[in-house]
Image (cartoon, rainbow, N blue to C red; front, side, top):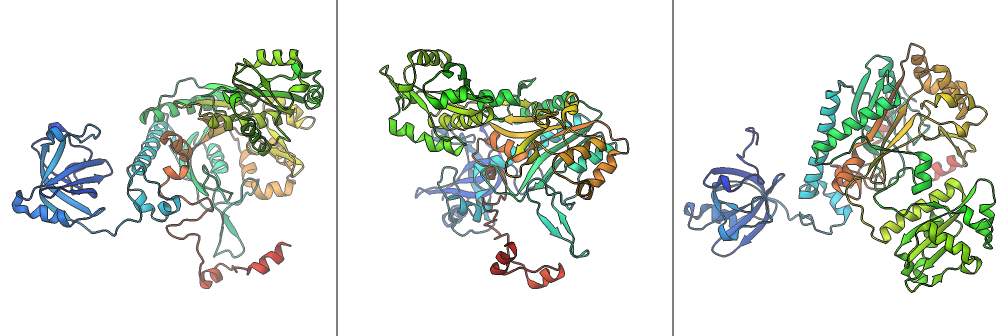
Length: 598
């Protein structure tokens, strides 16, 4: 413990070997038990808890009488002697062999009764926890999560410095480039009518650092995206941002693996090296996701050939149509479900893009039950059982449509069924997904869109097909997948200005708009830009998974709600007319706003 403190030890530090020592502890009164002749308090700080005891016959009874008056969550300082708890030792507590017989206690402040118990196993509503976040952070699990985050971030920094990286801070006020999520805009008071944007990532700036010769850059960067939120998204988040120059893709991935290995080891997690690599198409065809959780099976199988002559038209039509497939998964154990329960899977399938859901249940009694059973021949059932390793009690779920559509439908159902069947997902699962396409077709915009981002380097051997067959062009990209989540990703960057302009035009930019938004980058690329690549790791998401939490809010000190609100400070809030006037802004009445939108 640091000497720059009111206490000599933490509340989680003392052991049997400290018996007889005079110590000073500080912390909050967590639990208080008045046994008539004695008062016992569990004193808690960020390191743990220690039982402190008050004897009316000790120290003239002064500390005992103070202890009679203190209440929960009062901060106190105690001085006393460490002694054994003897037969009353608590083996479930790190400090359970000892207690402090108090000679003196100072009350440092009082406290209102907290709006919820400061306990880990409570069922307090999350909005109450966020409203009083400063109290919620006192809970041991929250303290542990924030400590984990701190330790992991520190280990990441150490690992990068070991590899001779330079930490560079990039601006928080930058140019709006609204081609991804919405930007958070900041009006300029000194240049009326003009706006900064808070960075969605330091992507362009780190590429400029490579042009500038930094060669190895990293930053623990705060980023901002004005997008709809969910459990693993926040309007502001932290990413570990990295860029390297004079490298190839395997150099970047190898470095990322070593850094992650060292940082994870620092928090007690083993990352086997080298990491597994799965191509994008293999991930989709096998797991139905480009961020697969491979800790459980239920893999997708292509059974198109089995149903080429099937009397069930949905199957035979797909089996004989170019580019369409019949695929399925085996949800082992779900074949014993009632028909009504199986039927409830259809809306689940529809939520992932299916038009319906065909299924075959192999009942525990050996019978076969299915709405489409009368259309399936004995030969087709036999071939299906062999392909899918069917046993009594299994449920086969199908999708018959275009390749990736079938994958996505079954991938969604696969994840749902793993949860419904309570399949174990033990330990952590790390892998790379590689070989993403450069583009995909955006049906809403009826245009090509970047699969990752518009600065990604195409595979050199595919560049000649950019105009003739853009969707077949591959890219130098890779995603870091952890426990079924996209925890990070990266790739090689375009370092040729002409190619960058060509890609932007394919994405729908005019040359004028491309130069208006990205002219500074393309100009920089004309000044001897080196080959470069990098990656970014979502610190919030990785820490969420390391902590075993369900939301990144559990590993952030002061998160927002899913509506983007800070319940503690009531942000976002209304600002005064004077501030708006200084910025040349006006808040429109709702009716006027709707009129302008029309």
